[in-house]
Structures are given as structure tokens and as C-alpha cells.
Image (cartoon, helix red, strand yellow):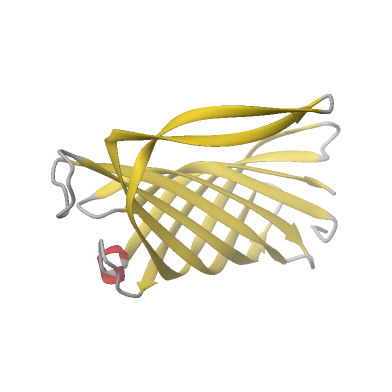
Length: 194
């Protein structure tokens, strides 16, 4: 099945390790096929975890935000009309921020509308600290075709992904080895022509 002129988008729920326990994370990735089997792209995962503790800061409770932003290489080992089986490798950053949801600060943002600059003020939780780690993941991707539309140009697949995440580095909030664990996700892949 010729795929060199295809792009793929995946969106789903990932079971992502956080500070205390696994949390459901929003996971998306986009890939561009550079050959009939190999695609390159990027991934983004986001989750948060609420904590009753304060991690030593002046706060009654805290929340940790976990964001993974990686470069992705995927190889379709088996590719038929009804399913595909792939291996993937991704590397990038694991961003961890600790915030106090009870203490708000005002942030200003500016936007232009018809040549007039407007100032917008938003109340956002105060950042307490941030950590940055190096993230590497490897795993497998299995997708089963659910259907297609637009005269077979766009196909939709039910996709499951399973891998292992390695997080390297030490931070003020956590140690990267706390997040070195398996990750799994389920979602939908949409594959179509460029």
C-alpha cells in the first residue's frame, strides 16, 4: 500500500505516570510519511495531578502539570488495507510545573483586532517551580481500520499504543526516574493524502 504521499494524525487518551500515580493524559501526534513505511512527526501529551501537600511551599494544596513534547519516528512493519502494525521511537522534553491553584496572579496578553491593540487580563494560578527532563520512548502501535470516506482518500483506524518511557534528570520537584515507566494509550488515527 503506497503511503509516501500520506499524513497521519492520532488523538487519544494515554495512561501517563505522574508524581504519585498514573493519570489519564491527552495524547496527540502528527506524522508525515517520508517513504511507504517510515513517517516523521511530533507528539504532545498533557496531564495534571492534584496534591494535598505543598512540597515545602506556602500553599494549602498544589497541582502538577506534566507535558511531554517529543520528535517521533514510526516504522510500519506490517501495512495492509485493514490494519497496520508499527514500531515507534520518540525523544524530547518532559516538562513538569508545580502551581498553587489557590493563589492567582494576573497575566496580561495583547491582541490586535482590525488594527487596534487590545489588552486582556487573565487570572492564572501562580507557578511555584518548574523542572525539565529529557524523555525517550519506544514502543509499538497497532491500528485496525474502522472505515474510510472521501472516496477512500481518508481512512480512520482504532489505534492502541504501548511503550516504555525513560525520563532522565533530577529536578527540584521530582526525579526523572519517577516517570520511567510503561505508557499505554488508545485512540483514533486518521490517515489521508497530503
